[in-house]
Length: 83
Image 1: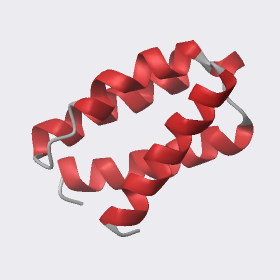
Image 2: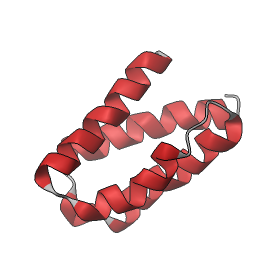
Image 3: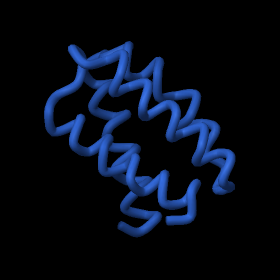
Image 4: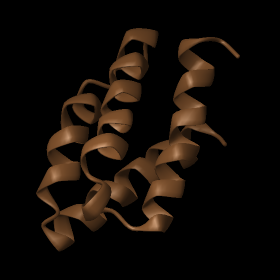
């Protein structure tokens, strides 16, 4: 996954949740989304936010979105932990 694909996927999730007015996943994600500064600490903050979406918004996200979040987590963890 390239950085552009990552950002497009992240934006796509937020757009879907905004359209559906799915407030729980948006609430969990937006702090990490806007804190993404391109540095490791920004990606670490986003990692926590993505994990929060999975933990606290189970009823508000689809299986496809859950799979996409997990894919985004792999990307963020590769950056944070240099895997």
